[in-house]
Figure 1 (cartoon, rainbow, N blue to C red):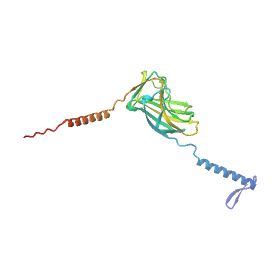
Figure 2: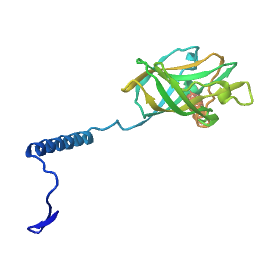
Figure 3: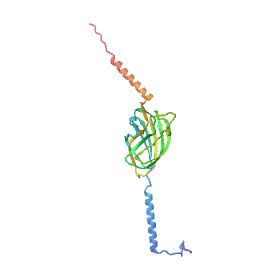
Figure 4: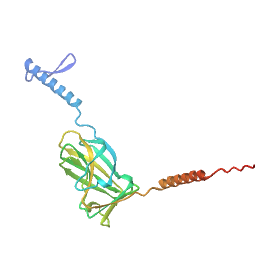
Length: 234
């Protein structure tokens, strides 16, 4: 039954609630409210980041299965993070690979984990132009590394040989079972094919500097050859 009491509408009648039960109920609401505040205060996951890394790799270290070399700086990745990795070859060299069953650039960590990754892979030319790709790849790896494993069917052009001056791979860690950040401290470039290495060709600007340098050296040598002749009359 509804009645008015001092300007307020009050519900009278119905089941009565004992003071003890009312106190217990209020305590439960208080605990639930506190738990809700705590849940809001604890972040569910860290913010995902994109890490851009450029590595100059000695093509003589390309090997099968692996020949890891140290990175200049450690790369740390967690679930949700993205690695944008560009690898070029020392001295601007161009690498040719023939007869391979795989090409595999990868980073190594000291901790094993199962990762689900997705991303793209590109082979780069001498001017950082794309000579093959991008290839979309999604992989699951259960070891201490991260990197796209490629077979010839993924990138092969008309020729039986793939020639490139670098690679770029973008990898997103979609999930991992380690539960913490993994640190990658070494890099390897693996293939079982026949590897050929061609020295880099200087760019036009480099040629200009070299020619100017040769001109300065030639001018200095001509000045040194001049001798002063003095004539005296007795």
